Amino acid sequence: MLSRTFTSGRIRKADYDPASRQLELHWDTHTVLAYKQVPEEVFRRLCAAPNPATYWEDRIAEEYPKGTPARAAGAADAAKKLDDLFGGAG
Image (cartoon, rainbow, N blue to C red):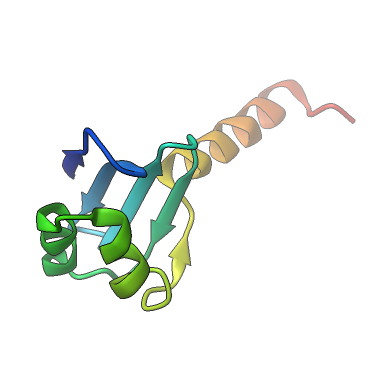
């Protein structure tokens, strides 16, 4: 997993998984947006952009399909495991 932290601007952190080609953007609003099928070069250019949020808006937001952030997928999986273990809340 490749990661880059930004100290200013709306995007605070970008995580990129070369194996799955998923890009996750952590925003200053504490939301995480994930995009699938993103080439590694796009991640590199995002990291080098003078304004990463503008690069996201121009080159990523409408270009790549949205995915599920790993954190959200992990939380859903954890909830299912607990339900399986304890029989759910039914």
